[in-house]
Amino acid sequence: MQQVGAIIQQGPQPWAIIQQENGVGSIALSGVWAAPEGVPYKTAQVLARVVSEEDAREVVAWQPAVMLAEQAWEITLDSIAQGGLYRVETSLQLDDNPALEWATRGDMIHHIGVGDLWVIAGQSNAAGYGKGPFQDAPQLGIHLLRNNGQWDLASHPFNESTASIHFENREGANPGHSPFLAFGKLLQKELRIPIGLIQTALGGSPLKAWNPEEDGVLYRNMMNIIQSAGGKIRGILWYQGCSDCSPADSVTYLERFGRTVEHWRRELNDAGLPVLTVQLNRCTDAATEEGNRSWGRVREAQRQAALNIPHVYVIPALDCPLSDGIHNSPAGNMIIGERMGKLAAAEVYKGAALHAKAPCLVRAAFIEKHDKPRIRLQFANVAGYLHAIGPVSNVFAAEDVNGEINISSWQITARDEITLHLDRPAEGETVVHAAYEMNPSSFLPLDSGTYMPILAFYGQKVSE
Image (cartoon, rainbow, N blue to C red; front, side, top):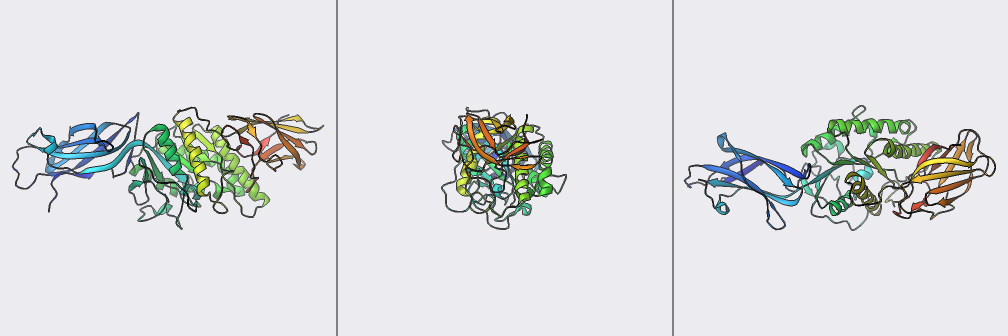
C-alpha cells in the first residue's frame, strides 16, 4: 500500500543532537506528499512543527512548507530553543481545513535534542577499553553518533563497529568502557541541555594520523563524520600520546600537536574551538631510561599545550586505576569523565564556580644551592592546600651538569609550595621532574580542594 500524507525523505535521524548556536537550533526537512486515494481536494499544504516529548507542549507551532514541483516540499524550522527531547511532526492540510488535529497524517522524527556536540578523538583510552562491571547506565539526552552512521542513545561501548561505515577508526578488538558518558551526564546536569557525542578515536593511533601535514587519515575521517552531523561542534575531547612516547616523536610532540589543533580549528572555522585533553596515565610495562624520559616529555608537552595554546585544557589521570597495563578501568574512566565535565563547565561554559584545574608548577627556584641545598616548587590552581598522602614517595627528581641529584626528602611547606632537600650541592644548570616515568609513584601530592594530583612535569629549569 502506498504511503500517504507528508513523507520525510531528508531530515535529522531519530536520537540526533542538533548543535545549538546562541541558544537555538534549526532543523531542515524535505520530502514528498500524497493525498489519500479517493479523497477530493483542490489545494494541499505540508505543515511541520516541534513538540516536547515530555509533555507534548508545542515548541514551534505548525509552519507551512515550501511546496515544490512533483509533489515535493521543504522547510527549515528555525529558533528551536536548546533543550529537548523533542518530536518533529508533519501533516498534510487539504483545502485549508483549519482543523489541523484532523489533517492527513505525516511522518515524525523522535528523540531529537538541541544542545552541544563534543567529538571524541585520540587513541585507545579515548576509544574506551575499560573492562569489568561498573554502574554507568544510559541516560536520555546523552546521545551518540555510532560508527554505523546512526544516532542512538549513548551506551557503552562507544567505539564498537557493528555495521561500521568508518573503517578508518574500526577497532581490532571489542572496546569497553570509556570516560565520556560520565562527561555527558555531568554536563547535562550542569547545563540542562542535551549532549551529543561523536566517537572518532582509534586505539594505538599516533598523533600523525590526526595531523593533515603528516599521515592525516584519522583527521580526514573525523572531519567527514563532523560534516555528516551538521558541520558544527562545541569542542573536542582528546586523549592520546602513548603511541608518541618514543625518543623522536616525544621531542616534537608539543609542536606537532599545536599544528594539529590549528588545522582542526581552521577546517571547522572556529579559532577558539575548545580542546580538552588528558595528561597520560601510567604504563606498567618494563621501563627503560629512554622510555621513562619519552613518557616524561609527552606529559610535559601536554602540560605546556594547556599553558600556551589558547582554549586547550588538561586534566591529570595518574591517580586513576587501570584495567591492564595501559588502559584505564571503568572506575578510572568515571574519574576522568567527571574531571573533563567539570573542566568544560568551568572553562568553556563559564558556569558555576567549580574548581576544575589541577595544581600546575609555575616556578622552581633554589632556596639554597650549596649549603643545605633546597629547591622550592610553587604551584598554581590550588583550590585548598597541597596534601601529601605519600610523603616518602619518590615523586620528584633533579639533575644538574653532573647528572642525577638524589632528593633526600620533600615536604609541603605552604598551601601551594613544596620544598625539595638535595643530597649534594647543585652545579650549573639544574632541572627538576615530577612523576615523569612510565610508571611513577602512585602517591602524588593532592589538592585538598579537588583531590586532583599535581600535573606531572619534566625538565623544568630551576632559577637561582
